[in-house]
Length: 128
Image (tube, rainbow, N blue to C red):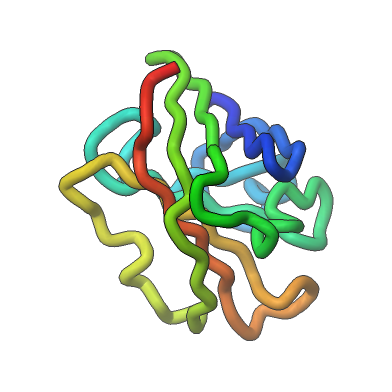
């Protein structure tokens, strides 16, 4: 469906539809039914931290202001990190849609465990 880059982490990954382990084994997975990059609403994406290809291995290093860049058919869209939170696996509110264009990245936490989820929240900044 496109690519996602996080310059602060020197990470680039293809984006695939789906949030299952086989999808995450290929790269970043987009949660079907959530917004697409550049559209109003919440773009929700998941990925592995320890299993190959590990696109979200270092999510905890992101700080407010770091960029997340999506390249999709409609162009290139830049989001800026606003905060990071650790939640329980049943925290389904992270996929709630928003009126504004936002992005939510999630992965298991801590690395190598499925006990919790690390969640990075971002807001649309600009079209590149």
